[in-house]
Amino acid sequence: MERKHFPVGIETFEKIRETGLVYIDKTEYIHRLTKNGGFYFLSRPRRFGKSLLLSTLEAFYEGKKELFKGLDITRYGYSWEPHPIFRFNFVNCDTSSANGVNALLEQHISLWEEKYGASDKSLPYAQRFFGVIEKAVKQTGRQAIVLIDEYDKPLIGTLEDSVLNNKFRTILKPLYGTLKAADRYIRLALLTGVSRFSRLSIFSDINNLRDISFDNNFNAICGITEEEMLRDCNNGINYIALNNHLTFDEAVEALKKDYDGYHFTSRCPDIYNPFSLMSAFERGETGSYWFATGTPTFLIKSLRATGRYLPELLNSEATEAELGDIDSYGFAPISLLFQTGYLTIKGYDKVFNTYILGFPNREVVQGFFNDLLPIFMDEQYDTAQRSVREFCRTVMEGNPEKFINQLQSFLAAIPYDLSANKPEIYFENNIYIIFSLMGFTVETEYRTSSGRIDLLVKTRDFIYVIELKLNGTAEDALAQINDKQYTLPFAHDPRKLFKIGISFSHKTRNIDSWIIS
Image (cartoon, rainbow, N blue to C red; front, side):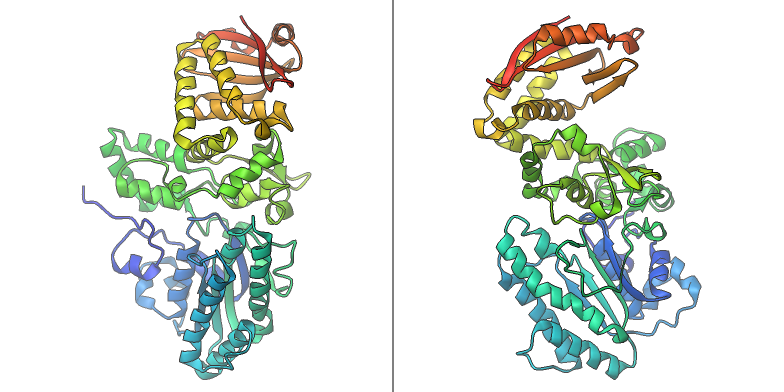
């Protein structure tokens, strides 16, 4: 089998096409953007193909017809006339001080002023930007194209530093406001990022900006659908199958479990994470590629600071407006989790116009909890992982007594200041994280015909039905399991079943007693 190669970390359309790397044809969406022009905003998680989308638009408006040979957009009879293009790229912007943003703006605008003519360099960036757009349009006779890559990188990177964050807003707001002022000179503008930051009105001067983040006409503009994968990536699927002694269908199923499951609108097809999928094809094996690029520490810390029960938080509902704004991340982290790709849309409630959220796939679940546990434990990553491995072996052995003893020691090691305010929630969250990391089937608030089981854990050989009583007794917890017949749904299951009642003490912030039946 002749290997095809996939563009891992390559976000330049021209390079992909000229070197023969696999390209997933998204040019139908380019046509939808360009046929009428306008001002657009698109939110998608990091490493989801936003930069490649802008690079494709750039090549299209540069008139590089030869790069698009065989692609969908060639069906529409474009004239391929070049337009003046202004592309800001904040992806690698230094956000440690205001100097980083200023240097980036100076670099971009100075280059365009050399090409089209300079304004007074003592003027603010917004006025210089307007001036160079006006000059370019008058010189070329064609309207300008403005592309802004990761416009919110400086804002996202400083959410924990309100002073620096406000400095960046002060610098960037008038720059983005130029798009409204220069409306008559601009054919198309596209801004990409994670959030629209609506609450502090960074877009208040751009009231002609169309947000296509939740638009079903653009739901698969980034990422890879299963249809696209099966159409364009058979070579990669076969390579994974060969390397891992799988059939083609088994390889597809493994990829689906690890990387599929993203939905960005109410009628969105299943979307695969493009960075992870391409990485798997190139290496010939699945892995946690997206998480290897880093998880924002402030995101994990904000979850701990909320003091909310994680299963409730991670399986919640939100409106489109709530999902589109992350300014209040410290108090409402759901939108932040959605915009950064840790939660996705699992369903839509038409009655209340709310999106039902959950984890997209196995890669996200494992990576998320791997990053979450050390923060909740206040331990090093390797120490936390050793604890999980020990728990996992004990649960697989069917030794609940040993597991609870291990859990007691684990909880006792958590610093007081982390669990003092809401020890019950902290206790429940840690148990939830631990079981989730073990890779077993874990369900919280499992519904039966007579009530809800606090925690249900299934392994290959065992089923654990666990009821927790906060400042109650273990006897009461076990009695509830029996009285409400929580084990009835598993009466014909051949696995050995454990009924476990646990009492948790608010005073000691630990397990007080337990009964196993």
